[in-house]
Length: 169
Image 1 (cartoon, helix red, strand yellow):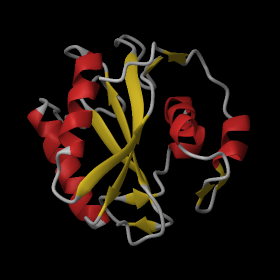
Image 2: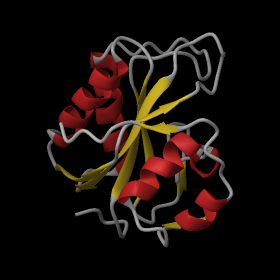
Image 3: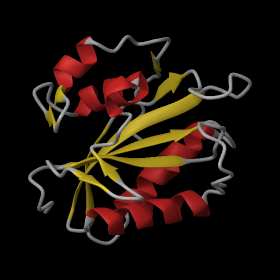
Image 4: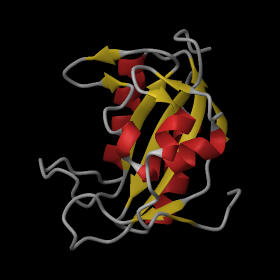
């Protein structure tokens, strides 16, 4: 069980090489990690890219897991899944990618290191994170240092975010 007082939420996104399939497969791979148990999974959402506009739309989701793995260990496992999906880290910020897995929240843990910031720095401003998160987490979920999920959601317009048909794959 997560020692930081709650579930771990993982943001998932893809806009290359069959994005829906990428996210669904990543879900299965995260759930299969040692010491990780899936608790919830949001619907899939289509969003406009944050970065360069000449890239395909993204498919996004949020997954809740219970885990005994420490944050940095879990991050390494997620990055290994990204690599297995052909993720290339070219240095281009917010560019197209086969798979992006972000640790959004790790219970009530707050940390900042060279490789990991919890809660995720972009969480409060990104509809493609907040709306799927609100689908699987209570609106009174406290985002440390930021307020409740419900408060953040009220201040974050959808900006073209589209919920796709729910698929229990």
